[in-house]
Amino acid sequence: SCLVGSEMCIRDSTGTYKLGQRILQMDFEGAYTQAKIYAKVYMKMPDDFYTFQKDIGLEESVIGKKGDVFQLRRSLYGLCQAGHLWWQLLRGDLLSLGFKVSRADECLYTLSTKDGFEARLIVYVDDVLYYSNDEARMEALIDKLVNERKRALDRMGKAAWFLGIKVEQNLDKGMTTLTQTSYIDALLENNTLFPGLQDCNGTLTPCTRNEISKAQCPEGKVTPEFFTKQR
Image 1: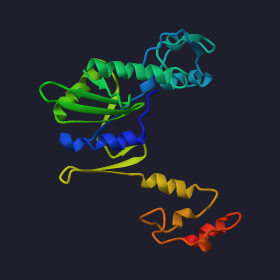
Image 2: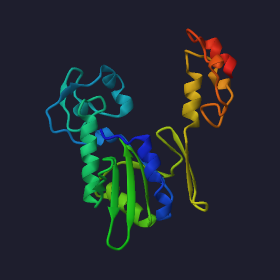
Image 3: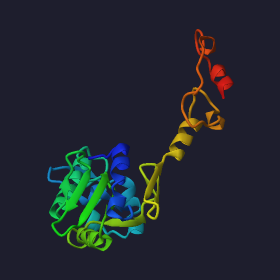
Image 4: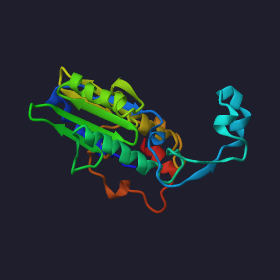
């Protein structure tokens, strides 16, 4: 499955204010199950599926009996080819709408028309950031994914979080701020080598601005106590 790196998210989001639009977000629901599977794959239903079939509302004529074997018509989470099948499906959908795959990153899709319409999509599996210089026209393209391609998706509005990155947008100032404070806090909190780092003092630069003398450098094996003294 195609993945976009954080650097692409950061690099490409700077173009949004050239287009003068908000960065929006959407999520495809049950993405892997939306792709058809053409290889012959067979499976049995989990036993609990039959235990709760009345609660689910399925008749025996639909799900068969315990021990029956079924041929898959659509992909499922856990299949080795599931990610690739979803990537092929989404890629085909976007290309059919006129988008092109960026040569810089295969997870960035661009659309430029002769009448001046510009749009961008950044894809991470089933999570998508998108923006354009005509929001109504962009939403009409997404409507085609829903109505013509029958894709189940959730439009989440203005992007706030993406890949653990907090997205803050200020159109008036022309600024997009991307922060990973929660990720850094989690790294400090879960650090088992040097516990208690979440209480350490912050600094604007990772290194001291003062000259470090040889006497200040640790000798021999560095222990956690050494770092405690540096806080």
